[in-house]
Image 1 (cartoon, rainbow, N blue to C red):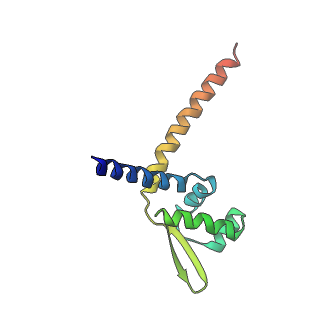
Image 2 (image 1 turned 30 degrees about the vertical axis):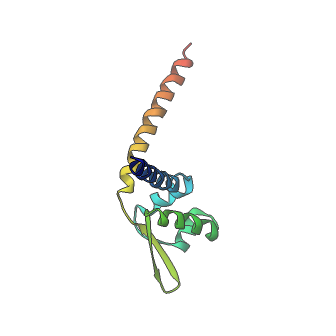
Image 3 (image 1 turned 120 degrees about the vertical axis):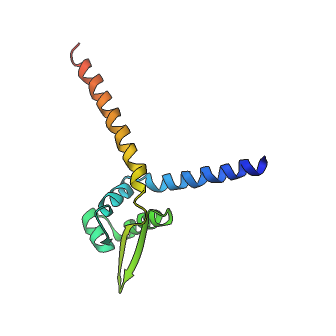
Length: 114
């Protein structure tokens, strides 16, 4: 029984670590950019307008979580989506947020009519 609880705790920790890797706005933006194909670190720096050191930390977190993969070609490093199933996680979140914002908009619209 105690072993089963420990196993469940490990599973929750792994899930939380994965979700934590996705929980930064810049990381979500990186994933959206790479959805359309592989990019070099230099191209990502230009597109995002951030320092390479900052970008590297975020890319490493996403790679460690299994979201991204990298390859090196001479001195350039390229990143791409490791597992497109990540979009099966992100899509429902977008749907939920759209519903939430529509409901908020509906409530705000009724407030203006009083």
